[in-house]
Image (cartoon, rainbow, N blue to C red):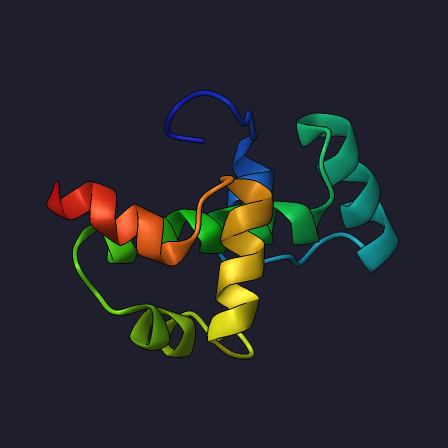
Length: 98
């Protein structure tokens, strides 16, 4: 959202921060999809991958990143980053130290 790639209104931001009162679950699903073009779960996965990238770039070991961001294991973190960013945690860390 900060880069302007993802557009959200105040209600969407509020819901992403955990306050999704006022609408039914299905209404939130429709609202997320109509405003952002993505499902809520997709937005949450992208945000978690962004945070993982930041931690890895700061030199945090992949095993600690996986634990901190509640990935099932380090392999799950690797698969997600490869799918979303096209890079592995090792490559992200290497680029940060280069």
